[in-house]
Amino acid sequence: MVDTLLDIAMMHADTLVIRAKQGDQPAQGKLVQLWYKRIYNYAYKFFLDHDLAMEVSQKTFISMCRNLPSLQDNGRFKSWLYTIAVNYCREEARKIKGSRAISFDKVWNPEAEESPQWESSRQRNENPERQLQQLELADILQEALLELSVEQREVVIMKEYEGLKFREIAEALNISENTVKSRMYYGLDGLKKILDRKNITKDTLGYEL
Image 1 (cartoon, rainbow, N blue to C red):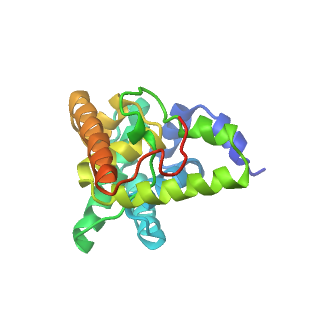
Image 2 (cartoon, rainbow, N blue to C red):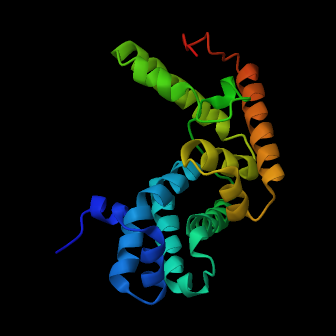
Image 3 (cartoon, rainbow, N blue to C red):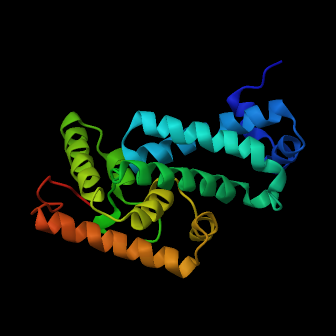
């Protein structure tokens, strides 16, 4: 009987990783099922390009299956997998000598600790006009993010879109948590300055915090 995605998600992650490390191909396939969307989304937000996101995803999971035996701490599988994806994104970015990125909201409230207030605003306002305003703002923020450095963009995507903790981002990028927080802060500050230069404010689009 084939497991559904829900069944797979209910599995104990460490057990699945252990089986995959031992060469269990069904377990490896389940790991791919569980993580493919997350890795694809990360790569797509990094490049705004479906083909590049597919390329990075394919390379990431090929590498995952090949190198799983070298993973010493099963509890760090997530950050380890993102490390692979990050490296392939950087590789592709070097090839095209310029990368593109994502939509993002927290620039309006850079001191907030958790997810941007955009989500709760979206949930509270489902009328078509509000949705159109949100899409317009997302497009503008997306363009602004193209101007950030790769290092700042990586942290912003991982924290605000992928929901990784600062510790996990630090592990994935092989940097300190303080460096992660610094890149996050300067990334948000950079976005604010870019939007200010374009005369874009939350009032411009009727955006409400």
